[in-house]
View 1 (cartoon, rainbow, N blue to C red):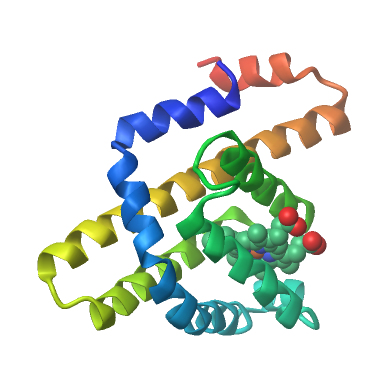
View 2: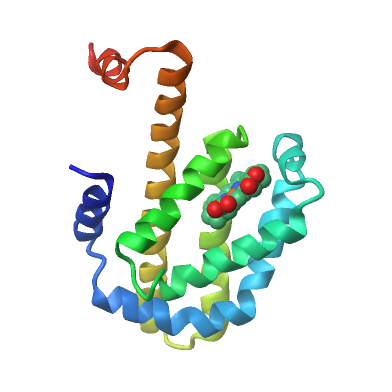
Length: 180
Ligand code: HEM
């Protein structure tokens, strides 16, 4: 099964439907207004830890621009949707982070900043508890899908690098991992 098919299956598995897309699109104006504060906190936090601070030093303004684009796409999709173009776009992110030598635990950690920051932004903007619940649930779904793509492409890029470095075939490495 192709990587994209895995993504399509996972969308079905978590029940990511047209109503989630509608919810995400409707939240775009909230995050246009409040997203920068989340992005600022994201990079402030990364600057507090030597391992991550070293990677972002001297390029925070450029990275914030990249992050703004990523957040806009979260609510608008890529090419207007959450299909193959969206998957390809997110798939590159994991590989880029492997290349800079980032330990994956930091990606896991900062996703929480987006989740809790997103919840705080929605709480400030939406009066109805039912609407808040429904829209936050759609936000969680897309963040989980993004994290899943990043994690899978991260693992894939690591195997590719291991195969290239050792000269072992990918199949052999995967069989080693699977063997009891
Ligand atoms: C939710 C987690 C994260 C998301 C969604 C995210 C998003 C992105 C995106 C969209 C890019 C641009 C990729 C491209 O060039 O096409 C990028 C690059 C980058 N990110 Fe992240 N990022 C995350 C976590 C982190 C963390 C934890 C660090 C820690 C230092 C980090 C540091 C960087 C750096 C240094 C680059 C530039 C890589 C390069 O081109 O040399 N990111 N990120």
